[in-house]
Amino acid sequence: MPATEHYSIIIIGAGLSGLFTAWNLQHKECDAIILEARNRTGGRILSPHVNGNIDGCIDMGPAWVWPEFQPRLQQLLSKLGIETFKQNTNGDMLYEMDANTIERYSDQSSHEMSFRIVGGVNKIIKALQTELPENSVHLNTQVTSIEKNNSTSGSPLRIHTQRGGKSIDYTTDKIVLALPPRLTQSTINFSPELPIDIFKLWESTPTWMAGHCKIAFIYDKPFWREQKLSGEVFSRLGPLTEIYDGSTIEDSTFALTSFVGLSAHQRKQLGPEQLIKMCQAQLLRLFGEESKTVKDIQIKDWSLEQHTTTAVDLSTTPHHPQYPANMPRTLWDNQIILAGTEVAREHGGYIEGALESAEEALTLLNS
Image (cartoon, rainbow, N blue to C red):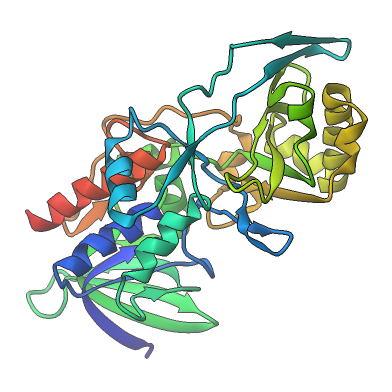
């Protein structure tokens, strides 16, 4: 028999929703842990260091915040003492119509109200995790099934997991399921089985970022600023459909960060080397010879992440999805509570949505 551990509340998923939920619960001295399949926390929030520079964090997941529209995020940043800085929009924007037509516009940035987080979005993740009790996040722990105990004795819920080839079971009174619904539907078995309409709704709910690929081109200097360009580009030609100045506030790392417009299937057919070659040819068209002086390239294709993307996501175009308003937030008489940006009522697919859904989960836990 596998080893069994018991906790009053178990959160599945150590992304922002899961960590924020645990962070709030530990202030109430609740007996709670997080199970995470990855070898790291943060989920789709990822801000790797580049060139060995601890200040040079490039956001390869979410990057922008909008203070006017994200009150929960602003409140959290204030509590954690994390600062933001305005997205650089100084200079002209480029619009690539086709291979022969690049138009230049002044004072027309789409990011005038966009801010970024000093040190990268992952700074929120680190700050939340630092305040959690030791050993409260169990990494490399893949949840395979959840069982409901229908008897009057014992814990109501049992979670089966795999960690390093070993089976570990957990029992708990409540579960906060902080995973994308589509990922839950494809990776976790439920006993008894959930209603078919729930599974169909989960399967039809797109996973934010699953279809996206971001590439950051790192330079020794922001040569585009010398050309009186903001670094902001929109292209109808591609393969990069959107580019922006991804440099850090400390000016310790200069970067052009971009979104790839090709689908996951198209990217797979090309392969990363050919894709980057095509992207650099586009940068040459847009910015000239200095774009060749790249000293590092960071690429993150979220469609290759098994703990983010399912087979259904691969046919999804990389745009911001619409999320269903009729998503049930609880299962099994409130013993399982859903969280995560995909189940947010108002801000689905944004950092604010992750916090919004976690707040609702916390309210349901107390009801």
